[in-house]
Image 1: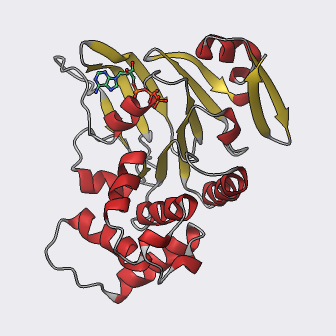
Image 2: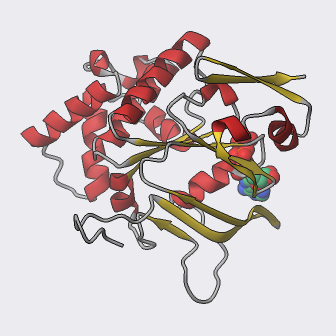
Length: 272
Ligand SMILES: Nc1ncnc2c1ncn2[C@@H]1O[C@H](COP(=O)(O)OP(=O)(O)OP(=O)(O)O)[C@@H](O)[C@H]1O
């Protein structure tokens, strides 16, 4: 869909329509319907096993919804249901534990080289000449991810938090409209977590839409205006933070008495 006034594509960032994903003989996502607009910073929150990683892998085309006859397609990103993986990554940068593991496998590489290699992954080419434009964009992505100072270091020497920043830089190199972040703070201590979240806030303020998938309320940055609570593969609650991040919905989602606190735009949760 395009805006007649501007000609700019206005399709939502993400549309999931009645999608069921089986893992084993069990529906990890059960007739899930979700629409997220561009610029709508959103957290998808749920306890272990609620279907969060399955959702990320569905969006990333690593898993597929059950086939059904007729439109609409179960997953559309920016209005399109048929993307090749490289094109998709150009529009929606993905930061996930799987990708972090892949980065770990390149441990011998240097940081800038690793970020530049994202261009070749996206274009599936044998010619690996780094043009001046590619170098400029890789350096710019490192800067935006707060990772410029890591240039020159081998990946193997980086801490978990530093490696996560390099992963974000790799996602940003294509200047995507949005970042899909699966458990972005896993493995970070509280200082590294806050510094990393501040970097995400910068990106959000700079126009990159954040889609954050997490089981930690504390990771929901103040820029995020909408929370989708996932429970047993279904949407349990969906709405503004001040409506969803409350004792009652979180207690239902986590199947325990949860008490929610709020301070300066940040939320916290603990067992009551
Ligand atoms: N390979 C698999 N085979 C069978 N069942 C699976 C498989 N992977 C996941 N599941 C099941 O699918 C459901 C959703 O799993 P998923 O990994 O999406 O949850 P999650 O919310 O990401 O959990 P976590 O927070 O622990 O990462 C769970 O019940 C899980 O046991």
